[in-house]
Amino acid sequence: MRLRPGLRVLWRRKGESQVGVDPRCAVVLENLTPGEQNVLDYLRHDPTEADLVRVGRTSGVPVARVRELVTLLERSGVLDPAPRTRPPGSAESPDEAYWSRLLPDGDGAGLMARRASATVAVVGLGQVGMRIATHLAEAGIGTILLEDDSAVRERDVGPYHPRDVGGRRRERSEAQLRSLFPQLRTDAPTGTRPDVVVAVSAGVADPVKLLPLLREDVVHLPVVAGDVDVAVGPLVVPGRSPCTRCLDLHRTDADPAWPALATQLRASPSPPVSSHLAQLGSAVAANQVLAQVDGRELVADGTSIEVGGLSPLPLVRPWTVHPACGCSGVGQEDIARPQPAPSRPGAAGASSTEREPSTEERELAAIGTS
Ligand SMILES: [Zn+2]
Image 1 (cartoon, helix red, strand yellow):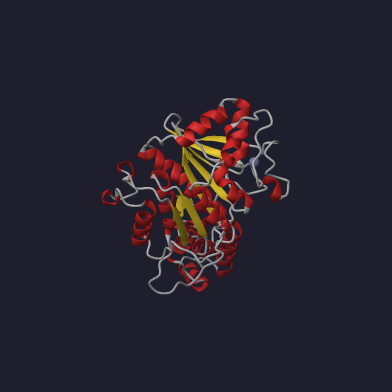
Image 2 (cartoon, protein in one colour):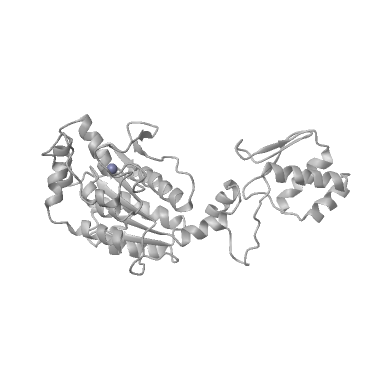
């Protein structure tokens, strides 16, 4: 038997031992004899029950009491419910150990296998996008599709190497990630549908660009690097949660000039993002993607998380489906073409649907449909 990975047996005082530290996974055992505390201490060696009985015998603890202690530990959830024998030379990754400690079934290996078989696309590979891709690769996502045909700039150095400046972001990011993570795949057979698409943009998200994903029912996470914050989400599960157009419509309700501002933001060059903000925002974004891939409960369901330099704490902003959007509770046909907000017939969001799709939109459409 073994304790869940990372849990330690700690001596509190005479007669009292504790397994684990955090109250959410720790347990305290009281009224123990010194011999019983010895038996518990021996758990650090991943003993068999026979080993524990032997330690009990030399410490004056009867076999029945040893078994009682083991049952107590089992019931309190600190023993690993899914111990596996590993092939020699294959170490448990920190991620697997972490989730083996926390998941009710202790199946960190199963969670890592889900990540390894998952496909995530990251569209937009500046400071923030490249860092998100790196986090995901490090966390064990098996296939990451990288989309961005623009060039690596001086200010992208950090997640990119200085020698990458001037090269295509897609090529440079693929080369770098594959050298760091040899198991990673950066392409997928035609027809592969990403489990999640991360769409990184500067200033404001463009609902028109994300429309193909909504139409094709592809889960996607908008990430927007703004003047002050990096805003992550809400994760769009088509038909179930507010989409980027819902957010646009809410913003238009609050400020009728928003469509005009948004159009200008989409057309203007993006401001640089400070490196610590890019790190913070990309970690939050990767955490949302991983929760979705793992099938864990999303802490931020239907909400965006905004991290920035002005507030020490993230701003968590709940969003609702906008009644004028029509992206939830209706057939997918109804969301095939965005309509202008009823109160703003001349809104920029509506007229922008009439232009030719850009290369990036076509890439998104390809990700969404292929
Ligand atoms: Zn919507």
